[in-house]
Length: 227
Ligand code: DC
Image (cartoon, rainbow, N blue to C red; front, top):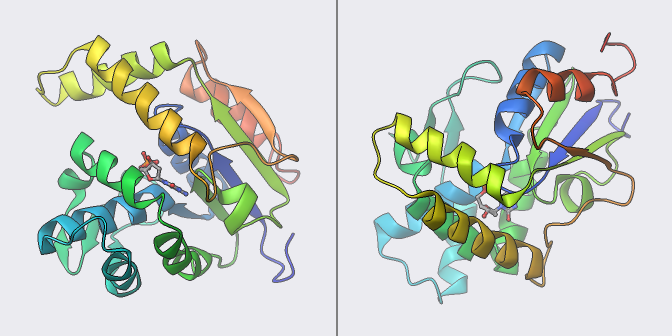
């Protein structure tokens, strides 16, 4: 429980750890709201691309982070559509280009500060599942339930390969593995809010574990819900 009385479950971890799928499934089972914080960073990265904003112009990126309207069409359940300034950008947000842009702007303290309140505003009754990199460490440190998901880089590359192949994209496992390793290093080494487990987070390794197994394990942490 938090001072607002609304329970929070944070689910942090690197890309490809299964965070999105697991967080959405858990939020749906609990009937709680869901925050996809990565989508906010992706949306600002994409909006910067639309505007031709220079990534070295931190003041302009901060203004974009404050002013870009980011709306989710559904809360929990199936994957929601994401509207960026009224435009459906769901497919563009999922691309590797958007991921790389998000990772780059996420290293800028002004951008993180600008998105802080936006993220906090998702905290509403009956509860919140917050998915990201720094949910348990920075944005919702008061959360009663914290999970840090991991999976080997090789397995994450394979998962991503299957997803992208299903969408008909031409990618190689080796290329994806290199991208994942580069992004992990950047996210873990940045000076502000680096990717690391909160001291009170429960580590869950999803390598070789089916999604349903991880969902059960996470649900078992929440007292009033049978695991
Ligand atoms: O979870 P994702 O792949 O959609 O996140 C995209 C990028 O955004 C990721 O490389 C790091 C950044 N990010 C972050 O720094 N903090 C968050 N809470 C969520 C995402």
